[in-house]
Image 1 (cartoon, rainbow over the protein chains, first blue to last red):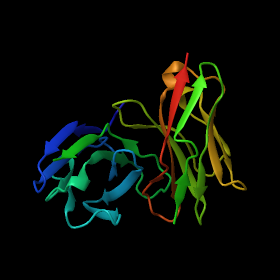
Image 2: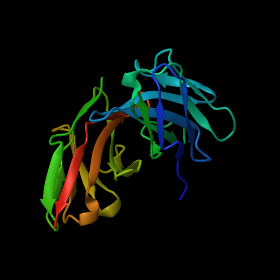
Image 3: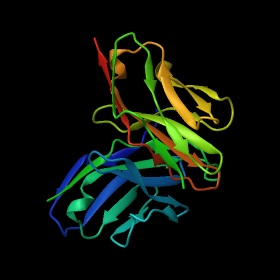
Length: 116
Length: 114
């Protein structure tokens, strides 16, 4: 069964450094998402991406964050200058049928980001 | 604004017992409701979803959930718990306004005792 993959599974970085989290969505999916889960807290929406542009973003997704689809398969989340509070599990998701709300989002296994 | 409340951050049941995980939602428009499960060191896997068809939704692994508009609830049940059901369960909501972001509850960790 097709699945969303994410790399790396765990990333440790120093405060102020840039990190790029990578995702390979399911191949025929057109909508891509990033969510994060700070330890002990809810899964929170960050951003959705369709047709090479941001479709929707939350207030968490400030100028420190950016997303990109650099090629036909990868979808990346960049954090420009990491802060301690960026430490979290970051989940990528993808879905098909962009015009339909309630469509299933398929999640990857997550990247655990630790900022020291 | 949408929100989801999951009552009980931890639920413990005996193997073979009924599983009931509670989810209440708040939405100003007709909601779409989801239950996801997360096994240790894995991503979120869809168990089932409600999208305005039948109010009783059957999912994978013997789970089902009933949408009750009058109670704004979407509780998850399974008649007989299995050890392999031990995991974290998340209820989530989106709506038909075109906004596709999921709003998640805080999760319920299910323990199954032998």
